[in-house]
Amino acid sequence: MRSPQAMAYTGQPVPLRISQKGTLADSLPVPDSIGRLEVLRFEKAVQQGDSVIQDVLLIGYDSGSYALPQIAGKIESLPDSILLLPMPQDSLAKYGDVKTYFAGKASTNYWPYLWAALGALASIALLWWLLRRKRNKALQIDNPITGPKHWQEQMQKLQQNWQAGKLSAPVAATQCMQLVRAMLQLKGIPTAALTGEELLPLAKSILPAQQQTALQEAVGVCYGMQFARMHPAQEIFSQQLQQVAAVAAHTFQSTHPEAKS
Image (cartoon, rainbow, N blue to C red; front, top):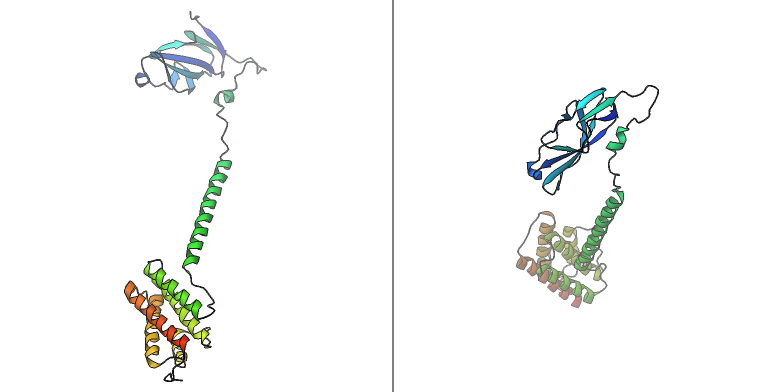
């Protein structure tokens, strides 16, 4: 049975429990104040049987007697009224520390999770880089090229990768020019730091006119693919690669007398 009155000191938080019949959807919001007492804090309402229970924290700053109305429900755990007494002078006895009622949950240290996430992302990025590097290495041709047989193997690799659609136009053209330079180097012609236009006159010493024309056409297509963003059809560039392969086969076999010096 509820007592007629309870006592507390001014500024001392007082807990209050409110019980309302019905469900959470039917429960009324907690007001900012109950009578002349202010609501410091209220917990989330919970359903208990056929009632909605909610804990509220009240505080009053002026001494006096305050009645507690029913506020759309049945007030539990407190009497009908509260008598707030002035705090005794020169004393902190029974003075409620508001901080203890507002002490939040211990903050979570998110740094371990953050570092773990960053570590996982770094591992994924490293794995992606290694796989991409391995894939790119598999698509590259050897450098340097040591002999005619090695040259033919690398030309076949270039042709297969191009026909399989594994190479972009600039990359395929760059590898083709690399093979052209290697072909001339294997015949004793220095090609370091020379452009394609500078290479062609040097090829006259080892190629007949027909082979020179075929090589000049292939070099022109390669330069268009490298610097002019030209994207020839797969069959067109495959023909150019075949022409370069035929020129190399002719060059590695012999030097014809009709070659111009």
